[in-house]
Amino acid sequence: MAHWSPQDIPWESFDPARVDADIVKLVKAAAMVEKNSADYATYLCNVFAGDAAFQKAARHWAREEVQHGDVLGRWAEMADADFDFPARFATFQRGYRIDVERVSSVRGSRAGELVARCVVEVGTSSYYSALGDAVNEPVLKAICGRIADDEFRHYKLFHSYLQRYQEAERPSRWAKVKVVAGRIAESDDDELSYAYWAANNQGEPYDRRASAAAYEGLANGLYNRRIVGRGVAMTLDAAGLKADGWLARALSALAWRVMQWRRWRLAHAAA
Ligand SMILES: [Fe+2]
Ligand SMILES: [Fe+2]
Image (spheres, protein in one colour):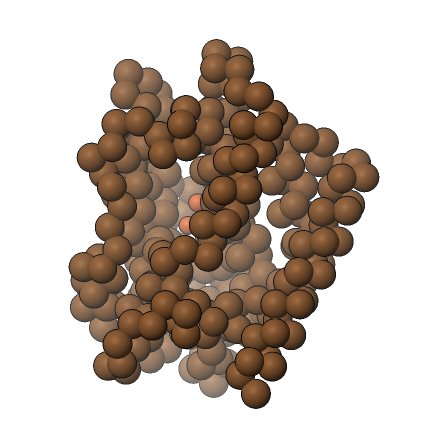
């Protein structure tokens, strides 16, 4: 059972006067990525063949992610009557598919896969926390709160399986740090920029750099230092490192500086 359903969202409270056009663009892009999660369940079930409990949890996880996509897409259709969620999602899927045929993790081991899943959930829990803080439209605020709660639960789910698998596989701390660094580097990959283009283009061809810059230009400014610090602590925990020591403080300060520098650079590139 999901912890909530679309019927729990107070759709009747929708207030068009409080809709922000930039936030609508971000919500449309997020709806694409979330809705695409069914393919990840297929991939995870292949990677964790023989572990029926994890496979069941992964299928449940994917249903929750798809529900995130559905409610975000529905909200975007309310906010922008011209937005055709099924058509836009079909565009996204034509250009972005994950390899569901793989039978072993792209991270090299099951523990590595779980570390990467934790990193993704750090990203989503931080993102919906930040988005929920930033929006004024009451329905979207309610949606973001529910989704953020789910994303924190997802992190805990993958983290609990990580603890189990690392007892069996005994990955080194270095191996886990490498997965974390690799997955963070992939945040710059095609998925989000392509989703942003598929959701928002007005007929112009896909330009990865332009789309990535447009997305980041809107998303980066949502974060505050508290949310970044919590994300760093959760990431360190997934890598098996102390989440509240000097390293956490140093990395949190560094991550915040990097985000601010990227924000400055994007603003100047656009000027
Ligand atoms: Fe999600
Ligand atoms: Fe999630």
